[in-house]
View 1 (cartoon, each protein chain N blue to C red):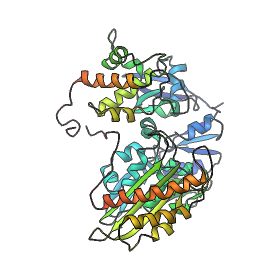
View 2 (cartoon, rainbow over the protein chains, first blue to last red):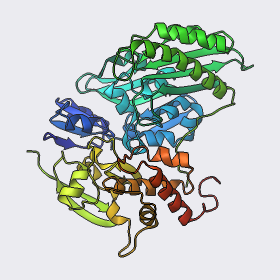
View 3 (tube, rainbow over the protein chains, first blue to last red):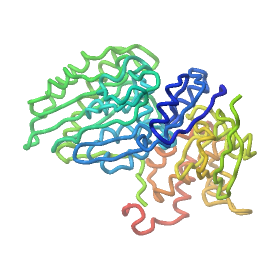
Length: 300
Length: 167
């Protein structure tokens, strides 16, 4: 690995001041950054460890919503009963990013800032109306997640800016969400297609009153599939309508051919996953299903 | 060249201080600086799990941790698993089930197994396979490793009351 300096600021103001000097990279879980430095893709003169900054380690929820510090690990998110029960698409996503070892360290903020089109947390957070709180030399700003990504590996962060936290509004009663992906293996793989959905049902639990759909790995950035969601709002929660949403989602993709899948395959799978994810999210909204982990969450 | 940093941490229960360059990984500090070569280097990019250690109670791949980040941390490595002259149950189970051949992946599997059983003393086969999915073995085909983990869990005995929600 190339030679670099290391700083570990204790306050957000110090971090912004240090990052503003340029040629630096923030370090959270390091599971992308350290590998990218090892291969020479990134060669920052300075690595700024942001894990000791209180705002980036915050994880709290109240009746307004959920606040996730950008450096909070996937493991901490999985361990939160609130995340598992009320924001379950997030729990779905963070429990399949990398291995258990990677989840111990990797953060959702880092996953977003790496800005890979296949990032598992992005479709889930798009579905949950996430906002990115960014600090920088000119002050704070908030960007809706659908405006955060600008291309593969690229986002709106300017020099000296840092992602501080991700916020999600509290779900309305009778809401449910789900993230799922297609990979040719059972675990430890990168999404060929990833789909996150959230739905809200009316009091009867039969009609969809609100829906959002996020798509991953089917375009240069994660995609908020607004046209697909429109096919559901005000409609009964039926397989027929899920299928229409899946079909509309396919039309919003612009995938590439690569070793993980072809354009045609990715388009097809997008629709299939939208249908399945909607079925699961509706079941969760009705209280008929909930987040399931393959790894037992420690509780003692 | 960046100046070296002093890192103070607890390794296998004993206080340690060492010097490292910022670019050194925890894996490199353990093996090259502290001469603790039980932790193995496999892929160096976080995929194979050979370098798994337990950092502040959580299993991590030490190739994706900077040593300088570990100041003030607790690190547990394969060197801390056995007692003097006495292997830990997990080590005996790996031996008895022939759950290793070349042995490069074994320290990582042992550390990951310890991390699994700490939180989940009676895992199902599916839970074992998912928890160990970040550890690759090119020799055994995994079945023997899974059997060794199951035997370790059986040897350790049943769950204590209330320890994991009655699972």
